[in-house]
Length: 313
Image (cartoon, rainbow, N blue to C red; front, side, top):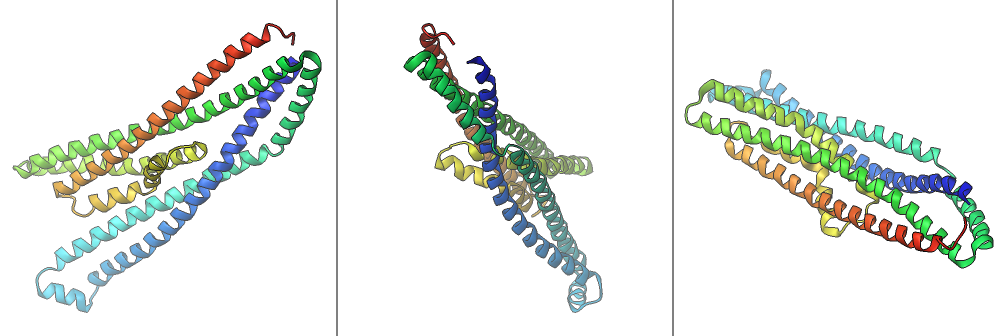
């Protein structure tokens, strides 16, 4: 019967992978719609903010008014900051949408390469079942059922481990962002008591690093959510995961409101810490599922050992 085992193991792994890919494709299509809508919304905001800047930079009634009251530079700077923030958020959403399209195509291509694996698996399993019944009776058939369950759990464990890897990458990135924000807060506090240009430059350098990492974190969180598409989790955790897709908005809306105000840095710290906590909750759940899978795999292995002694395969 060993001639069947390796083929069945491979086909079962393909079936599990295809099921995971189909769940990932469904999730990516949802993400694509969300990011397409968000990019379109941000494109309109960016267009408006750029128009505001252009309106103030050229001769206009608004420009004349602000010039007359002596606030032209202040107003223009505010409009430029808002336009810059809108550009950053739009660019981040557009790049993420491109990443989703790439991931979706990759998943669809791999899924398409696995078409028919379920039928091939069922056919081969039926063939082996008949052979097992003829050779060993009910005990051998029970072993076959346990081996089938063992193969499924082994494939499922690999998918859980892939989700765990994605989650740990996001956790590490979020931790790095929090470290940069903590440093920015420290330099910002020093700036308030007379730190001067050096402290101001250091603060903004750390904020630049945090901003650059936020886009990376957004991509990692999106991939983490995609990896979790086929994992059964409870409703409370699902709510937290849904928030992963807007982390860049939360960060950018806060940090660009006023780069000089410590309160904005602290709000961003709180938001990143919240994301960290959410990731850790999901990772703990994944560890629990992996431990449960390992326990069942061990139980099945012991049961097979007890049964196989009386069966010649």
